[in-house]
Length: 412
Image 1 (cartoon, helix red, strand yellow):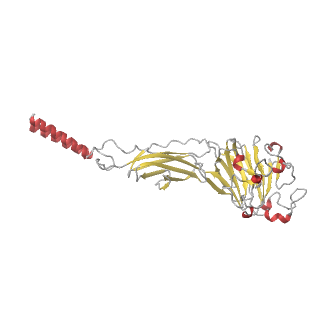
Image 2 (image 1 turned 180 degrees about the horizontal axis):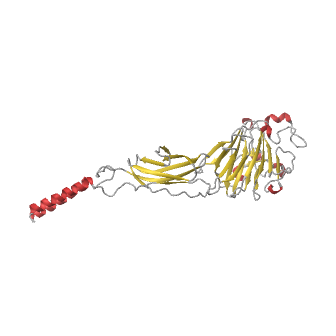
Image 3 (image 1 turned 60 degrees about the vertical axis):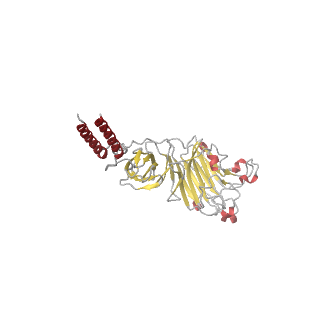
């Protein structure tokens, strides 16, 4: 073959190479289409259901590394402490960040010794004069686990010393006295325990009962607030031999106006408050079985490119009412509730979150991380679908090589 024909053939190859470089897609830099979402599996963390009438709240225990006694941190003076003022509050000083004025709170706490039901009435103030007037509350509890125990009864200090002063009345059934310092007699028939509290301004009362970890637990609270309580400071219902001075009743006879449920959020970093509709209707607390627990999963690409769409799909058990999507904490819109299509604006690592919520306020969250690469146009030629070809640079290098080869052929 003469040099002229060789040059013609090589020039044709170069043309074909350039066409290929400009228009033929190479291996795609885009992520593969998202797989179908995996079916969610039950979470190890147990959730609980608190029901009053037609209200149902999903509740996650507040997690802690200390026993519930330390979480509650009940202070009373008849304890051995170097500082005699340490115990003068007669209140829960460990939960002040959760307490609110004229409000009773109900929650679950999970520490190293298991799950406890915790109730606290009103808000503690170091300076009592800054607090609102106290009040009175009675709980009649049924369904207490037989192997449970009272971690805290606020106040049961009179049983720990020789005084006869006592504000509160605690009637505990024979099978439900473990952990208590004493009892004021039998509760009503069919009731495991009746706790009746009165407290003064700027102070709290409450309880913590440990042992709600088993799946078959179902505890019911029949409440009585304010004037409906079993006893109220200085009135005739109080069975003490020497009733308190009614002239001091103003400090004790305020009101509880709200009854709240407190739950940990799914990530455990915060709490969520819900409000009962009634101060009179009974409340039931029970664990949600693993088969009932709401779980969520999220599928999508592990890699994406700036300005190119990536699609993520969520799947959750239960009757989902809403899906809420966010990217790095910023809410994101979705064309379809369970599917998010998003074009990332910046390169880097992004976190995609979705929270699925039912009408009963059960929620579950899933997340995934995505490595987002720059959409490079320098040195590459993007096709309409964003897939790069070999690039002009590669074509020119190939052309130079072919021309050099042709020159050598002519000189030979």
